Figure (cartoon, rainbow, N blue to C red):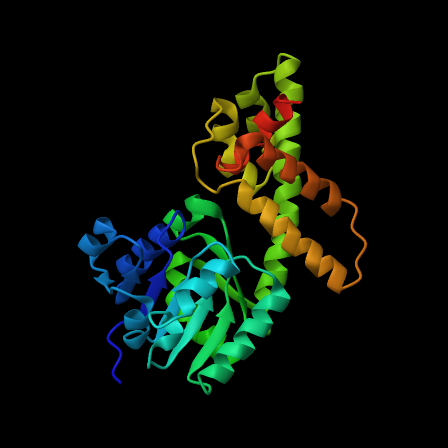
Length: 290
């Protein structure tokens, strides 16, 4: 079966849509499917398919940018799922999910397809800002052959790096999220401390950004923090989910952690207070709420 598209993308949300635009701009032949057509992507040159199965028939790689394993199972299973296609392709899991589940899923897919469908995990970091500018960190887990193939189609979106076998990308993302969660909560706490002490937040973060407190996260979130702009970007609720995955990695490796437990509790409370759909910068408002 001839395949007419370089990559098919399933999951056209806050991350999938800008990543699709980046791939189209790089000249890749891109196919898409979702519950509803995205006219901006079709206008930009994406090819629409009515189901994941039809998309899989026509693509050499398929990228899943959906939130979690229930959504992965939904778009993969059933008569119209991508696994029902007859194509030979590489399935790329862009979701941040449990590392051990990823390995088990990959084994099942490769067995069910008799090796016709390969699997890599490729979670990303950099948020909607990084997706729009092509500056994502892309953490690849899988065989050298599969991750080399994945790198070719993902490179317009950022820097893909193989960190190990299948599931290793998820471990790398868990480590990333531990650092991001602690940094973002610290920025929120420090912002409230400073504001209640009468310090101008814009001046503070411009100053601290030049020292050891500076980070890519601070650079990206500075204006949101200063202007109390929590319009949905990277939804805070996903951090709570990701920290659960990090806890799973810690348990599997018998690693004692100091920050992970308190951070998981804090982000769970943040979501419970109704801030889960806001941008991650909402840690400031969460601290203000007591």
